[in-house]
Length: 224
Image 1 (cartoon, helix red, strand yellow):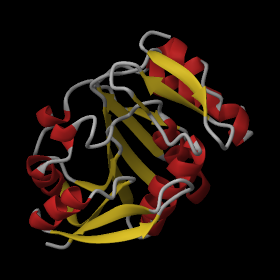
Image 2 (cartoon, rainbow, N blue to C red):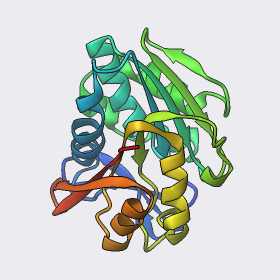
Image 3 (tube, one colour):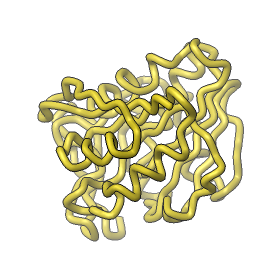
């Protein structure tokens, strides 16, 4: 499996441990539990049916768990979503096949969707199901087109102790530029300096209760 090691998190779902970065892709207390709590419940669901289309940017496509869970919500609520994931260090298709998300989500029809997410070409948008427009770009987030606008950012990069450059003031300024007014940035990270950077970039920042193993997560709203 290359430089990633398959591990079982406490809720029974898989995550990967990056040998290169010395950290796991998800919480070891529960990969699916964390993604649902942070990105779906606190990030995506409050926007569903409020917007004609929800434009999502993810910093760190990773294992593809967050877009898979987002796809489920899009189809369930008949909500148009446009997802763009940026990933500088993609996992292999073989690695994606070892993950047990489809089994735990108990919907075999999701396998085709999940496989297409991992097999699609970089910079090629595809329609999955009837409501979910999916695109991934294998590149550094620093190279993103700054004229793009999103309603929601899943900020799911490796943590500040691992990729410090993705949590500094320059990065939060970049995220503010990419969000529409009233757009939301949601992340598992509650580091004090990161939250101060968000405030300096013009965000209204709030701490929310975290998933198992984490006291707090961060939601930030671009107010102007």
